[in-house]
Structures are given as C-alpha cells and as structure tokens.
Length: 448
Image 1 (spheres, helix red, strand yellow):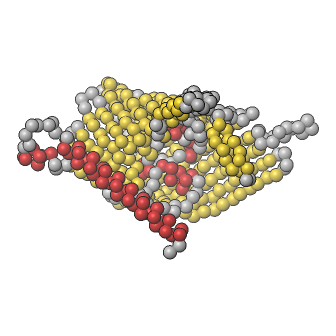
Image 2 (cartoon, helix red, strand yellow):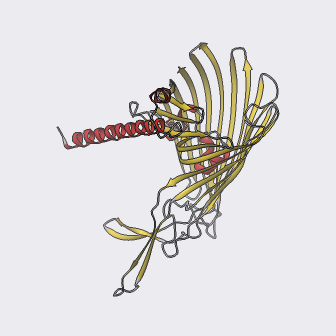
Image 3 (cartoon, helix red, strand yellow):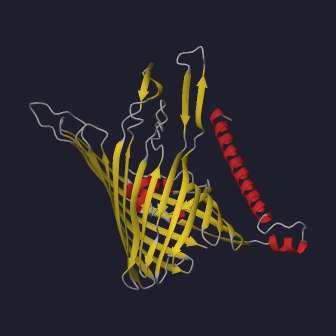
C-alpha cells in the first residue's frame, strides 16, 4: 500500500471516529436531558421513571437528485493591449442530496432537533453556482443540532442552530460577495453555532396569524473562536511588555417578525465583531473592525393562488483598525517577504422578488435576485453586479414524489478601472468582464 493510500485511509478512519464520538456525545446529552426533564425529588419513584424515559421521537427526511445542464460564456476585454479573452463551456452534471431529520420531545417544554446530510449551503453553491462536480457523495455531517427550551415568556435554542438562508439581510451579511448567487434548497440550509431567544410581544405566533402579530428574535453565534488576551512581561527584554490578542468573532442578529393578515415583514439588524478574517484585531491595541448589516424580508398573499415574496439587504465593512498591520512572513521565490494586511472597504446591496402562482396541483415559482458588491479598496472604487433569475414549476407526480423542472440564469458583470493606468496620449478604458451561465435543471425530490 502506498503512503498516499495510507494517509487517505487514516483520514477516513479519523473522520469516522470523530463522527462516532459526536453521535455518542449527542446520545449522552439526550440521556442527561431525560434525567433532568422532570423536577427533582428526594426519593426515586419507579413509576415516574417509566413516565420520563419514553420520549416522542419523530423522523423525516428525503433525497434529491438533480440533473444540471449548463452553458457558460465568459468574456474579458483589456482596452490597453486590445487583448480579449473568451471562454465557453458546456456541462452535464448530476447531484445527489439526502438528509435525515430527528425530533426528540422530552416534554412540552424540552426537545432536541437535529439534521444530518451529505450537503450544505456552501457545497450546493459550489455545485450549482460554480458548476463544480459532486465528488463526496457518501460523506455526511450535521447541518444542525440544537436543544429547544420553551418557557412562558420565551423560547430558547442553543447548539448548532438552523438558519434560513433565504433571508436577504443574512445573505448580505454572511456572503457579501456574489450574494444573489446563493442557493435556495431547504435541504442544504446553513447553520450557526450559538444561542437564540424568541419572545412573542403581540398576538403570540406571528406566522400565519389572522390578526396582528409581533415578536423579537435575538441570536448570538460564534463566527470564529478566540481565547482572549495574553500579556507577557520580561524585565530584561526591551520592550518589557507584549500583548497578544485573540478575541472571538461573534455575530449578533436581531429580528422583529411582524404579520398582519396576509402581509408579513421581518426587519433584521446584524453585527459581526472582529470581522477581518485575515487579521481580526490590531496587535498593538486589540481593536478590531466590525461588519454591519440590515434590511428586511417578507411576503404578501394577494389571493388564494398568488403570493409575492420580497427582500432587501445591505451590508458594509471597513478594516480601518487592521489595515496595513503586519500579518507574517512568507517565502516567495526563495525570498522571505513580510506580508501586511490589505485594505478592505466594501458595501453590499441585495434585492429579491419571488412570485408564486398555484396552478392545478402544482405551483409556478419565479425568482429574481440582484446584488452588488462595491469594492472601495482600490484607488478607484468599482462595482460587481450579480444577477440570478429562475423559473421553476413544482408538481407532485405521486404523494411522495415531486418533480421540479427549472431554468436558471446567472450573470456577473464589472468594469474595473484599476487594472491599467492612463497615460497622456491615450485614454484607457476599464477592464470589462462578463460571465453568463444558463442552466436548465430537472430536480426530483422524494421526501418521507
């Protein structure tokens, strides 16, 4: 057996071992929850134990197969040299996604939810938005796994939280570039490590309420872990004191779901602390830079057979505290080169319209998503434009079999004036770039 095969086997065994340890950990957590599900008593009552142990566990899941055809046209024009580059591609790809969900209800106030799948939002984005083949069909992982605690004033969730990636402000917050290209399939929703609290303010549940409803939902999650601050003092060394920072990067997300009859809207505000992933803080003073995002998402049911979804999101980031700071040394062409943090100054806008028309036993769904990414890090700022337009027909061939033919259009465009400098004799235009992808798809869904 070769060394590469041994390393590959080792990695597979290690991942399998990690998976087993995670499953046993979750089983242990559930057992602990069983033990504390009822109020404590000084004496053990066997009949009461019998009532505690049976837990209402529900399973559901499904599988998706997707036939993905693609035609791509990519053009780059360089006015300074009259150089033009054109690329065309035609692809036929297939994707297979499967998932399994479990809900364990200990009692009316305590439950546990989990989902395992072979895909997530990032993988599906690479497959469908970038046209990459699916290579790891067999590997599965947790998409979410969290504990749900219901009390009279509020509902708490803690763990690997499920995230609705169709929320426009969150998309602009998590993926500020190429925002409109992000996937929509619920089987590959994203997740956050953290905790959330939902408090109904008016009307109880806001979703589907006939009257007015208002709630607040606050989430704190870990974007990247940190350990805090370390101070090293050495009297015989100049400088005698050195400070090292490793603050965690956190996301704070505040929502206010509002509903009034057939109309709903959810304003959202999000903040990411220490958002510069290259250098989260200034080593000299520990100060970092934050990303701010805001917007809303909602829907309006115009009639029994027609409704309209909509959303608008904005996000901005400027690394003024970490720009130009020393990052480290790298070896380039056999030379040691010091690397300093680059300037990052950008803003994102994201808009979406999603009409949904019921036709017979199916539904005709359209979606237009448009986003911009304004990059202000160069001498002259410029804007990327991203478009994603889809039309999909959803119908049930049988009770447990759904077919969805779909046509999708992806577009990326920008004019970059920073590629070449202007001279006195010639006015040199910007580098023009366009990328167009047309993707017919046939999606087959089998849920249970």
